[in-house]
Image (cartoon, rainbow, N blue to C red; front, top):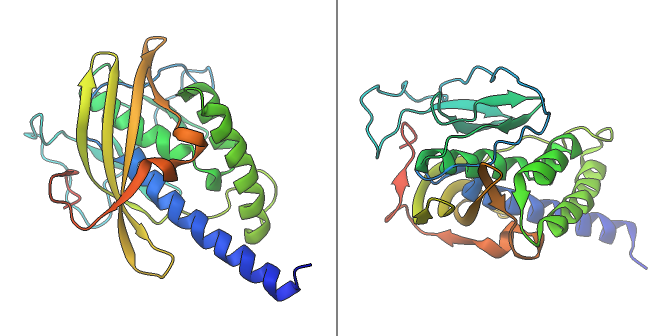
Length: 249
């Protein structure tokens, strides 16, 4: 039998571990800046006008003469996390916390990975992660990812004392850089680097490898092995070898 103090310590360790895993997932989900497209099946099955993106706090607006290696991006707030948005490459639709509609281009694939990947985190609640995984994630481990989110959300909601269905907190990761590991018309692999809080309170650079596949006329994110992004993530000591996101460095 666990004592009350032991249960509290166990719960606290779990919360800190989940926070780090979320930061890692956000990394891969938010990085890779130029390749392929994501999946355009509308989760809400309605045509919605994209929410007006905003420029990231503390950064200048993007320059029009960006070019292929420095694409013109703006930044939209998602529960405390700034996500990259392109008027040309997507997401073309954002509604009820969901995002979909990306172009069949390298940048479209990168933006799909970032915007979809972040939304697979349990922290945002089932109204976001369930339809995101159902409509925008594919692969043999998609069901495992959904089951893991259901379990993690229950623990996070209990710890945060929020009503069922509500977000269990805000995000604190920063999308920093990306690297395109592989790209083909129907497949892409992107390494995304994000900065987030480690369990000891320091900042860690997390590199998440994300794979995408073209299905149904759009890109979809392939679920990570065993349904956990931790299996696809490593840490980095610097951004050497990666391309920083425009206006982020």
